[in-house]
Length: 247
Image 1 (cartoon, rainbow, N blue to C red):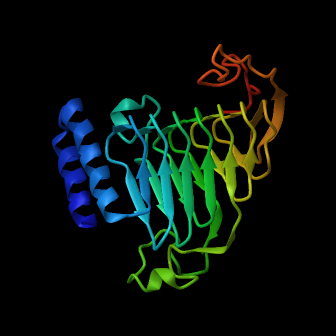
Image 2: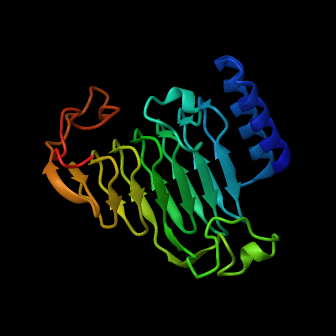
C-alpha cells in the first residue's frame, strides 16, 4: 500500500497534471493512508493540495480537525517549498491539529504528543519535533529502518532517542517559514514566530519572538474577540515587525 501511494504521487507530479486533478491525487493518497493507519482521524471539510506524507510507526494517533488545510504542492508557494507536509508518529506518539489549522510543507514528528491549536497558520519548511534524533557516528538520523523490527529498537537509524517532551502550540498562532520548534516547548495563544527562528523555550501568549535561539522582541495587545467570541483567523497584529536584522 505504501509503495502504491508513493508511485501515485510520483506519477501525478511527474506528469505535472492540472490543479484540479493534482488536488484529487492528494485526496486519494490520504484516503489510502486512512485505510493503512487505523489511528488516523480526519475531520470534515479538510482541504488538501498535493500529496502529504503520513507515516505511523506502530500504534499512535493523528487527529486532523475540521477544515484543516494541508498544502504540499510547491506550485502554491511563492517562497519555495522544499518538502510536502509530513506527519510522523513513533509508537505511542500523538499529533492533534485543531480546526482551521493551515500547514504548508510542514514536518511534524511526534514520539510523545504535539498539539496545534485551532486557527494556527504555519508557513513553509517549518519543522516541529518533540524528541531528539540519533546522531551517533555512522548513523543516518533520517534513514529508513532496515526492517519493521529495527524501528522498534531504540537507537535504530531514524529512531528518536533521548526521550520526548510534548509540544503545545496555542490558538491563532502565526509561525513563519523555516522555523524549528524543539521538544518541551509551549507557545501561547496569538503569538508570532519570526522566520528562521529556533524555538527552544516557552513563548508567552501575545508575543512576537525571533532569532536563534528565539527571544521575545515585542508583546502585542490581545486581539479583540469577534461577535461570536472567536479570535481573528490570523496573526494577532499583522503589522507587527521583528527586528530588521532578523530574517
